[in-house]
Length: 223
Image (cartoon, rainbow, N blue to C red):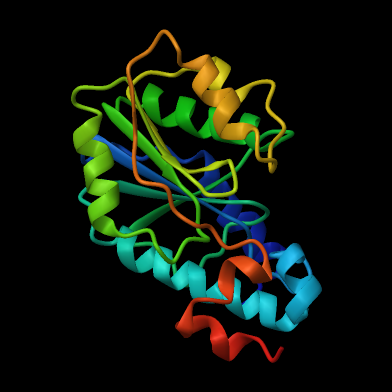
């Protein structure tokens, strides 16, 4: 994946504040980390090396982009560092923005807030590190929002891989130990007075143990 020059990056990042007129009642947010050597999948890299960890993450990004294209919604990619102009996220399919905030909770809150203010009825966010996530599961989440306030896809590590809502629940994004096994538990406590639905539990790929049983990922490690 090409790295933009500082001039091109500045121009591309102007896109972050562009207003996109909704063409659907549904919005799908994909949070992604810019794929840079040594800066993504660091826990995985401890076992398979930085180069292999980067290739695993790129593989997961391609999978996420592929399934997201099947969703009938306005699709938004929120980059961690810089908006990439020419990458796997086709600008004719994905609207591109930057994440803003001091931690993951703040960044997600800001993304949800921005899109809900734009007028979307249902907003969903997914991560980009799950081979088990598919379009049918995301579509199920949108359907479950018809009768529920919030939909969550629990991850096996105690977090979640999907979050969907129709109105902004501020507490969900506050006072969490992000990246730990308490995130889902603490989130559900915040939603005790709300009607929520849990999707099936999935495995996200952060460590070697998470990835070693996937046949399609064996080419990325030499252990």
